[in-house]
Image 1: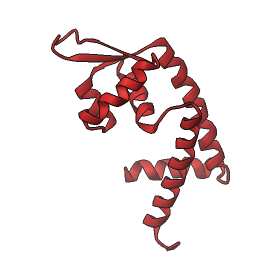
Image 2: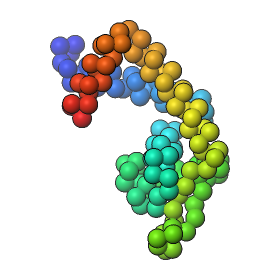
Image 3: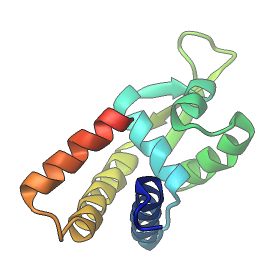
Image 4: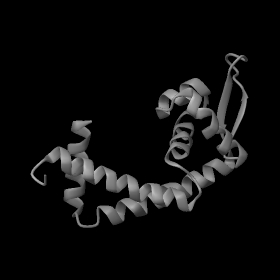
Amino acid sequence: MLASTGFLLARAGAESRRRFTQALATHGLTLAEFGVLMVLDELGSAPQGRLGEQVGIDPRNLVPVIDELEARRYVRRAPDLEDRRRRAVTLTAGGRRVLERLRRAGAEVEEEFLGPLSAAERKQLNSTLRKLI
């Protein structure tokens, strides 16, 4: 199995995800909730349908994720300015603060995970993964 690049990529990805999921859990968040915060930080505001597409979550599964983030006051829903039949989701100041903490936690997890690699090896790994994706 160790001769299989696909197997090694899958194992490395699974371990990286496990570590990051644990870091998120210490902040009381899930990977899906983190994804929503990240996308909103990039887009500013988004209708729920577009947000679901960007995060890769089915709209039916997105509603409880947004409900939880809204209950924590990390996001808010409001009528969409372009189409008042839709609801737009926006990141709040509290959401931005928690997202910044999560980014730092993610950087720490990545640093620990990639610790055995030199700076040049990390750069090469990143470049190689970008080519694959």
